[in-house]
Amino acid sequence: MNFDIRAVTLDLDDTLWPFAPIGARIEQALHAWLETHSPATAQQFPIEAMRQVRERVFADNPHLLHDLSAMRRLTLEHALRESGADLALLDPAYEVFYAERNRVECYPDAVHALERIAARLPVAALTNGNADLARCGLDQHFVFQLGSREHGAAKPQASIFHAACTQLALPPAQVLHVGDHMLMDVAGAARAGLRACWLNRIGAQWAIDDVRPDLEFTTLTALADWLDAHLDTKDTAAA
Image 1: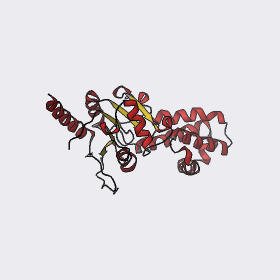
Image 2 (image 1 turned 90 degrees about the vertical axis):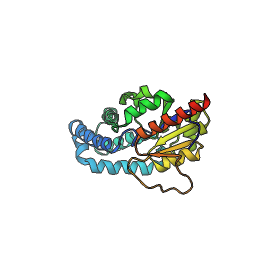
Image 3 (image 1 turned 135 degrees about the vertical axis):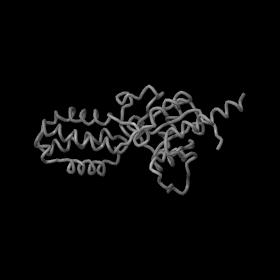
Image 4 (image 1 turned 30 degrees about the vertical axis):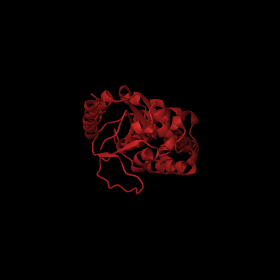
């Protein structure tokens, strides 16, 4: 497959690192903190009850689906208020969440492959999540990070992909978006006119009829290998 790629946009959660272990640690850390600082809240809202509050907050606030930080704060505020706790605890409770949220453990292949890709092409993070690459210790590999909260709309909306292309000063057809999610990443990017790479670590079956990924790999290393071969071929052809 032959096409011109001048930059990469990269999803974060479940692309560079698995999110499920982070989510589990967040629940445990918040509950332990509440047991110390607001026992009544911890008692009224153990982990499963807090999860139900979070799901209800998401259902009740579809206008905030692009802003997971606001959703988390609303969840914590609800639990504190309902349990009669001091709302001054909201900010420190959120910081407990955010510190744990940014304690990521990358997939074994991810960092080295990211280094290889970033040495060849500009790489921008494009995420619906609320990770902070500086706090994760990975920001040096990226030219910028664009999140749905900052943009005001989430993937798969075309506008967030186009905003990243504008910031890269490239047309969509010269930008390759890489991510794990069939709809949010691959279909969203393809429908917005970008090239799309499905990082299919779990061996899922493609399930969207109107678009398909331009590339599909099970590891980020395989993408780095493909880019090495593809760009070397183009460089040779240009010479």
